[in-house]
Image (spheres, rainbow, N blue to C red):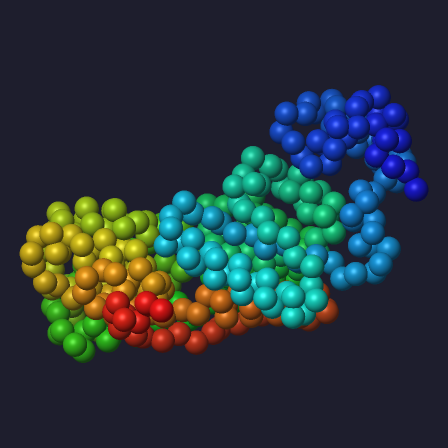
Length: 328
């Protein structure tokens, strides 16, 4: 079997250059990449880690793809996702690798596909996919890998979706707030424009307000605590209650109301620990992110065993979170 030195000799480049091509380093010219790839193909070269995995007939790897945000509270969610995915993968004896969207941001569909295949990846579990992630969307649609999308309703023979019922959950928390406070005018702080979950949540609030004959004002807060705070400082006093598409927005809204020294009921969505530190008890939708991730890995295994893709809906709870609920 040819080795990396043989490839370097055939291509007329240094061994380190071959390594850079194999790992898709951006500072390698197209001409050099073409020479190295031609040599790899001619010599039927396979990187050692991948060759070892294949020769031992291990099942294909599962790649965990996370759309990482630079925010401590979102990190809490991502860590629960990672914890659940790795725990379930260990239980199922599946080999996993973790990748972040930012690591693939400057790569084409062809480059991402080649990289994943070089790592013996056969299945993907994707967290945080939105319509704006064009290349990752194309990767899912290509059908090259068995794929599980968390919070994205993409289903095909090779693709499953795992999430809570976004519409029902948002409707339930809106109803809980209404029963306690009977507001007439609702301010809704929506999430990101092209988020799959936000479409469902927004429609639920629209339908609820129409049914109850409530006045509804929708503002896009992009899941941002800062934007939510700014919006509520500006117009929050004109409404009887604030319904939010995320807990972060709810916290920002509550902080703004506290600053203005007025009370309006606020509800969120997610059930993150930070809600317990917002100063007032708020109602929210509690998602079990660890369980969601574990289910997603189980679904990836199911797809690898030849089953067809499907939608998997997990339960949610409407809860009120206070400080004592989150301290240990």
